[in-house]
Length: 129
Image 1 (tube, rainbow, N blue to C red):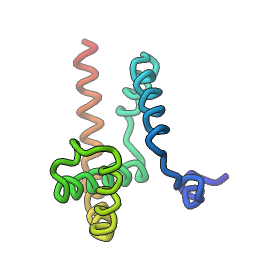
Image 2 (image 1 turned 180 degrees about the vertical axis):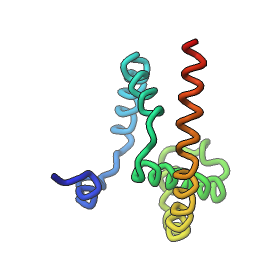
Image 3 (image 1 turned 90 degrees about the horizontal axis):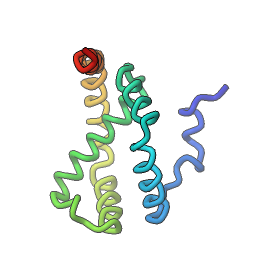
Image 4 (image 1 turned 45 degrees about the vertical axis):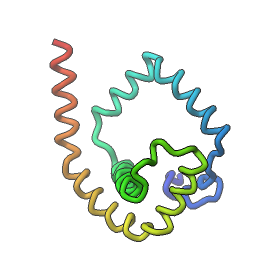
């Protein structure tokens, strides 16, 4: 059986969502986030140690956010089309650096992961008592 990472090279996984699709996703996620089952699922996920793929993805997001903030301090106030353009510029200018720093950030996150889970579980135990 193929894993997700083996499939991820396929073009169908590299599609990006346009503005209308993003709004639709946002509405769907807003409705989902209010459901108790979804909240419990999220809580259960936070109690588990993330695998290497998820840690790397999180590290990459953090790194991109860092470079984005450096290049475009007012990114949050930009229009959607300006954000798309800004993201393209950031990836073009800092793509190699992002990949390099992501590896270091992933190692730091991987080392801190057991402590994060332990802290979250302890907070859950405290709220239950």
